[in-house]
Length: 556
Image (cartoon, rainbow, N blue to C red; front, side):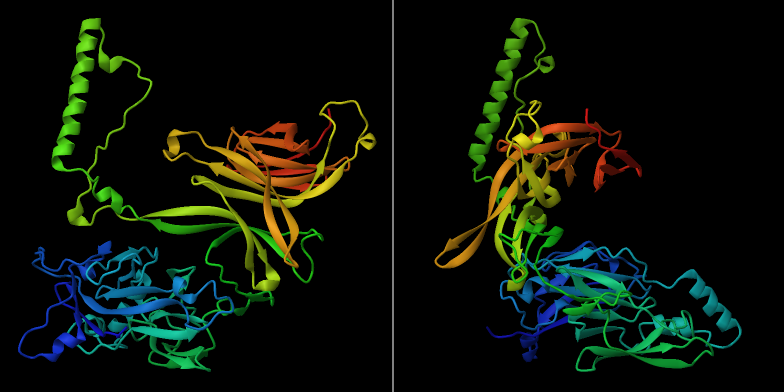
């Protein structure tokens, strides 16, 4: 595919226009923009193509775009060890805008767009102020009164007619990341975090926050130290006008693939999985996991966009829609006549089934039904010796959220609960289980009370074609109706391993036997349970209203 070069121009009115460079080859006709959006410097929520439509332009413009830049955020283009997780899914095309008032707006291109005319950018909330602080303004006013800096220094820096050096610098390969460095009043880095752009504040050492210039960092250069370092020029604390050069070897020691945790001295390695890891625990079972091939259980969640373009059109013609409306009206009149003859009000009668009608219509002139984000939870078994490849997985339900996970043994008790037989008379064996606690929310949302499930999995190794294959098998599931399962722990008491389930405000002790979980103990807390920590036979319970309970296990 032939590469094309585009030119982006921002007008003083705040209108952004994108042209194709090949359209400038002809000098006889003026080139037409292929993409145009108004209100570019006003911080609109979505940038969408409005070419061919008339938009109202304000009479006066107090906010103007001083600089903008397109850039990519994400891991640098380098081959990964695992081919199943390419770099492209973590990279995003972004747009950063700086105004004459010092505001900074970050936009991200929606990846679902295909054609050039349908490209849209969504604004990402940064939650940080990019303008100068009041203390900086007061300090600069003091410097102007004493004649240390010129009286019109701030006006010249913000004027559109004066020479202004670039403040937005793109970089590649710094700490394994591509992004942008904004040398504004508050210097910031724009990098990628799990595929979404985010910002990091630049740590300035010996930098004057409000020196002789409106911005502390006045120079930036990347590509040093084999491409991974950079250099900054900043205003130095002390005499106004003095500057300092600082050379850095990276943004942070955590970002490279072979990183270092700050303050600990521990070396870490980043494993890009492409999902959010909620829980992780080693499968400590010599039958399936070994030191040469360690297996881990991961409770993960992944986000995807669901296409709702089918809602734009119901597939019916105007005559068919009118026919449905007439049938509903006739049915309503029939019920009203029956109510009048029976002497009761049809609106006050209880009905067994509530008929739902579409009260809203999709306006396709403003874009139609947008895609929605959907979160899917799953349990993974990964092999750390094979570059953390997924061995087997189990996906949870459509409206089910994974909240807790525990890998531990459970004692299988064959005798019935409450029997008078001694513990030593029955044969008891311990088996390793992976317990997962979930919360189930119906598709109608908060109209249905929250409930949960407890799922027990077993990891088994089978021999297939001369090689050992590890499989994940669902052994048992139990519905919990008094709240979501937020905590799972393994309790050892009387030489037996039992499962402690924290769901809602209840703590239940479950015993495994006869292929099912049986409740053998309980405790009713006063608040929603968040976490349970076991110490011998004592329970430390953490609640949602900042309370901690400590109690022991007693046999009745």
